[in-house]
Amino acid sequence: GSAHVQPKDVLGRDVIYYRDVEGFGDDDVRALAGFLERERKDIDLLVVSGCSVSPEALRALLSSLVGRRVNQLDLSRCGLGYEHATILAAYLPFLGSMTVLNLRDNDIGDAGAIA
Image (cartoon, rainbow, N blue to C red; front, top):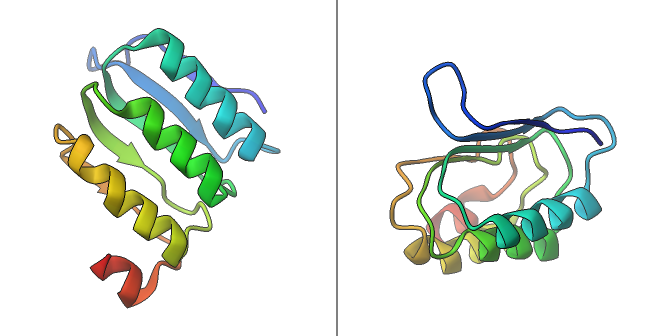
């Protein structure tokens, strides 16, 4: 898939934006994680929305974000379930600067929300 990566948005924020990119899947999420590992920059808004993300790809993505400022993370409509929620719960303490986590339209359920 192709990406909508911009160094700054109209508000001057650092943004990485993948929403409803046709064919965007696990390999692309892992490639994005690798890019983020190499770049090591802070991100105001990271959107990975409307694609299928496996637990392993989610773990790689979140691991690439540890140790940097990420203000907002949008994982809406990514097919996330309970296993994804437990992975998120494990990584959230290491993403302390995050003020917004969008998990809308996923199926994490009550048990996942508690995790």
